[in-house]
Length: 323
Image 1 (tube, rainbow, N blue to C red):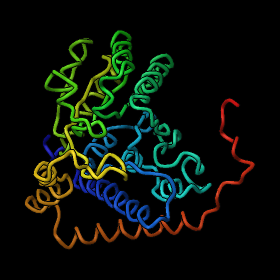
Image 2 (image 1 turned 180 degrees about the vertical axis):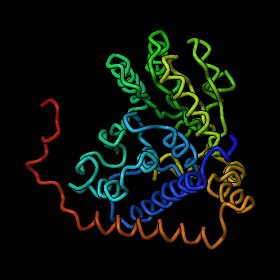
Image 3 (image 1 turned 135 degrees about the vertical axis):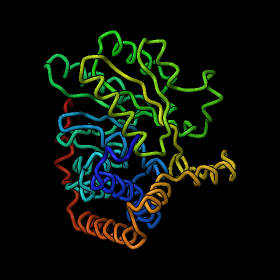
């Protein structure tokens, strides 16, 4: 998109959010390897432009659903990192009171439903939110993140079909990082793009560079505007890549070193910094300052999390809807 349509402040804000996503993930990885954090983690280093570009196009009142890889979505949606960090430490001050952990991050009051670890599980919930927005005549949209591993789930097809015939205000966002766990997408899908499947439901489908934050923002904004004006859903495919394995137990041996290296050359943050310095948007000292600012924010988040209380045993059934 024409970057001049975005103010300098807005563009730099998107850059800082991408930095916060990446550095949050890197810090979490370090804490996990030190044994200071319970559970497991699924990380998304390399996918920052997808998270930030989509969330930047959303408004207050919109709802986001996520996946088992939700950290960057939550950061980009604006949930304070101290509450995300506390959740990962299983503390009562966490965004889900320490009961959800890595795969269930979110805060509905801040526009992100706690993430669903079931592959494709957030897709019908996004449609449900969109149906409620339409029924209540609210000018809001639901955006739904899912990976390429979800696009052969029955619920994916059933939900998109329902959303299409009812013209629901929902944006379906596939983060195509090329692998469902260790399975390369080309081995499980004959069509060349996920977005091509949109034609079967009579809705627009578009594939964009998921490592270009401005391209992702533009595509999401168009889809959201379309949804807000009663024209129904859009299927967006964001081509991106996760630098880490599927989870912390995955060394990623199914991917060649050459493939990983090629995608790292398309690192969305390095790309932004290079273009921004060329255009005069950023200087090297300013980059250093931004990174120092994020580092300080993360230091505060870790201190907050580690000093927070653990949930009490008698709270185990609090927030449970059915017993």
